[in-house]
View 1 (cartoon, helix red, strand yellow):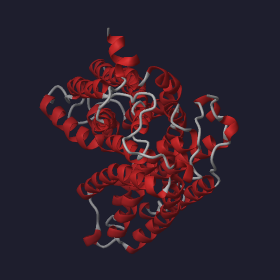
View 2 (cartoon, helix red, strand yellow):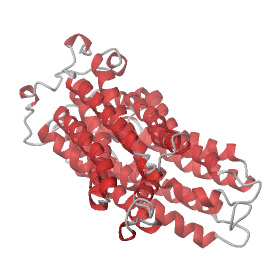
View 3 (cartoon, one colour):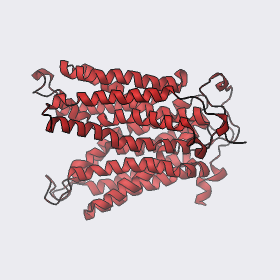
Length: 456
C-alpha cells in the first residue's frame, strides 16, 4: 500500500493539476535539510556535555565536533551521485520519502550518541545517515521542477534551492530556543533538542513527500511554445547519466561548480572571524572596530544574500542564459575578491560587507543555476542523476575551500609573523585566481555532440 502511494502511476498528476503546488513541496524539503548550515549553534553545547557551563576534561574538542559538518557535506555529494540513477527510476516521491526518514533518523541516532557520549554515533547519525538524507533531499525535487517549468527552469529550481540557503534562518533560532527550554544544571539540552527537531522535520518533509506530483508524458504549460531551437547553447536531445560522464561538458561543468563553490565556501565558514580580525582594534581606529555582535549580524546578512541569490540569479539565468550568468559570477567575483584587501587596508567596513554580500549571493546563485545549466546541456530525461554526480564537486569544494582559507591564514600568522588583519590578502588573491580558472572552463562549454544522445 505504502509503495503505491510513493511511486508509480500514483504520483502522476491528473489533468488540471496546478503546477505551482510543486515548488512548495520542494521548498518543504529544502527548508528542512538547510538546517545543516546552522549546525554551528550546536558546537559549543556539544563541547560542554559533561562540564555543562564549560568544557570538562573528557568533553569533545571543537575540532572533533567540526567533523560532523564536514562528514555531512561530503556524504551529501557522495549520496547524490550514488542514488541519482535510482531517483530517476523510482520518482521524486519515493526519494523524498527516503530523504525524510534518513534526515530525521539522523537526529534520533545523534541524540542517542549525545546521551551515551559517543562521538562516532553522532558522526553516524548526523554525518552519514543525515548526510544521505541531505543528498537525496537536495536532488529529488530538481528534475521534477524542471519538467513542470520548461519555460522557466532557472526560476523553478531557484525557488527550491533557495530554501536550502534559508533553512538556517529557521533552524538557528529554533535550535537555540529548544536548547534553552531543555537545559538544566545537569544537561545542555542537546539530546532532547535533537529528538524534537527530528520529529518536526519528519512532519514537514512528509508534507513535501505527499504533495509532489510528476507531469504526465507529453505535458507542457498551456500556451507555451518551445523556443529552444533558437538558442544554440541548449542541447536538443537527451543524454543519460552514464553517457553524460563521457562528455567534456560534464567535466567542464564539474570544474565550474567546484571552483565557484570553493571560492565561496572557504570564506563563508570564516566570515565572523575574518571581519573581526580585519577590523580589530590593532588594525583600524576604534570607531571602526567590529565586535562579536556585529560579526554575528554580518553572518546573518550573508545568509540572507545566500538565500536571495539562489532565486534571483537563477531566475536571471532564464533571460541571460546559463553561460553568461556564470561568466558574470567569475568576472565580478574576481573584481570583488581583489577589492577585499583594499577594503581592509582602508578600513572600509561598508565596502568589505558589500563585496562579501555580492560574492555570497553568487555562491548561492551558482548552486541554483547549475541544475538548469545541466538541463540545457543534457536534456530533462536524467537531469536529477547527472545533477547528483556533479554535486561531488561540492564535496571536493567543502574540503578544499576551508583548507585554503584556514591553513594559509595560519601559516602566515605562525610562520611569517603577519598580523591577523593582513593574513587574508593572499587567500583573496588565490580565490580570484580560482575564479579565473572557472571562467576559462565556462568559456569552453559548447552544446553536447549528438553522438551522446539517447536513442529514442
